[in-house]
Image (cartoon, rainbow, N blue to C red; front, side):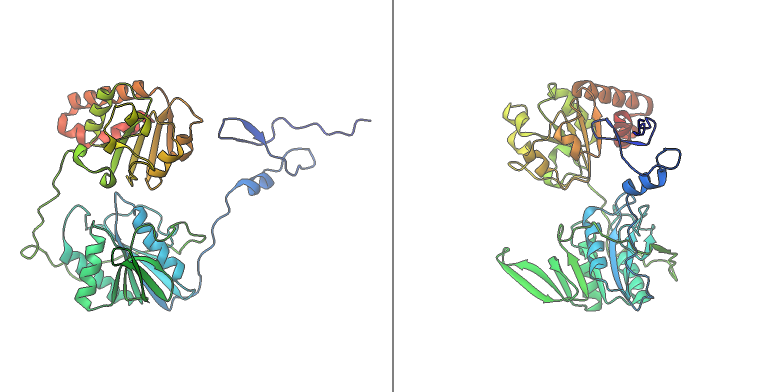
Length: 389
């Protein structure tokens, strides 16, 4: 008698990165069918635990500006730093200047104070200082953390420390619950001191990936009166718009990069101009003479930290991937679905590079004709994303 059980061909399966079906063995019920609960448990990511459920006795406060509804990597690192050194009786309060649509709990915050009346593109240092001081007065944090950057947080942290005569440490590259450390004297000396009242954290000092989550409670915040206007003391001259081609790649927020798959350089440059993006290139494209050496991105070129990086026809050599490791969103356009760049990309478009560039240029031209040049430029980023998807 044959005692071998027939394999159920309709049992649950998973799809690999190569598009192949893989059946995972598991417990079967009396009918021989796969147990969905057992299959799910083995593959579903387990939820992270709460960092603490104890009533808060103290607070650490993190302040940062939002960028299009979210915190950038530097701000996330600063929040993670506070969460990592907080003990079970300490809550982490996040104060966000600007609209915030991200998940504060997943980032490690126990309380969220959103201040949507502030805009990162507007310079209102006195209003922001008053708002931060009000939040500090409400929660009396033991320490206040801010990213030490040039886009408002670093300035706000220094203004606050000077206004309240607080101890402060800037460009902090190492910290724990007892001390902070910074490089001084052209990075030749490592200075260490006790954890001060205000900590301005340098970029990439902390891994923002946390093994836990915060409570994520949103606090409805209202000022007792209208913010004190900065007019008359500080004058906002606005943001001067310059050609994206003139922005250094290390400072660019939006980069389109060309590889060996880009043959029509003129069409590529036209697309970059339409999208308002800086131009980068792979080493192969530079060696072929298509782009200047200062456009090369990678370990032997420049390291970039763009919010959006679109790679056209770049396979993704190890050296190039090192140069874009700090980019927030990477989009790859390539015919080879198994190219190394596809493993790094958040979105991979399997298509011909030249056809994709031509389609985007045509879509941009159509948008300009329908809406006018000004509206097309304002919506170019959204247009590009829609065309790629």
